[in-house]
Image (cartoon, rainbow, N blue to C red; front, side, top):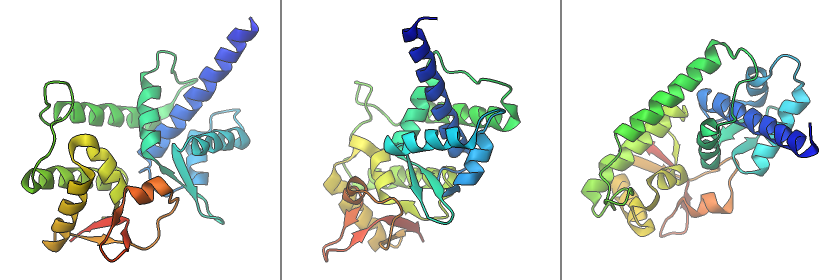
Length: 225
């Protein structure tokens, strides 16, 4: 086999390993999953813990996952990681190297079903394949509540959903200023409470996509009342 073919095979193997890890992390809830539990889930026969840890390090470097904790490290799936998982599963060269077992097969089925549900239940578009802009509080409220409930359910967030994830899920459907204003209005109407405190794996872009109040405090989470 030529050197270039060996390199390609190695790259494909690494990419497949990353995809399998991201799928397992997503299936385990995606938030604060114990590192040891995750490695145990993805480790294949003959594979060392060190090689699994290397895959984790690369995904963290790519900002696909976030590691937190010292004595007991936990792993959380980032938005980039969810996008990378979707792309990885669509690759023509992606495959499972051996019998995957019922848990992995069921995780894949769950991903396919939920992806199809999102496609079928998509909001009205503007004719260019993009979701239409949300121009009012009344239109914003049901959409953001659906996103909140879905994130809370899919990632086992225990009714404490990061605001930055909600904002990124909405994307360019709503302006940043309207998102801030309407989220605050929903708090004023006792729909949820916006909470500050600490956020594991906080980065400047996550802080930017959270909400800064008029008195200068930053709110990172929404808690449904």
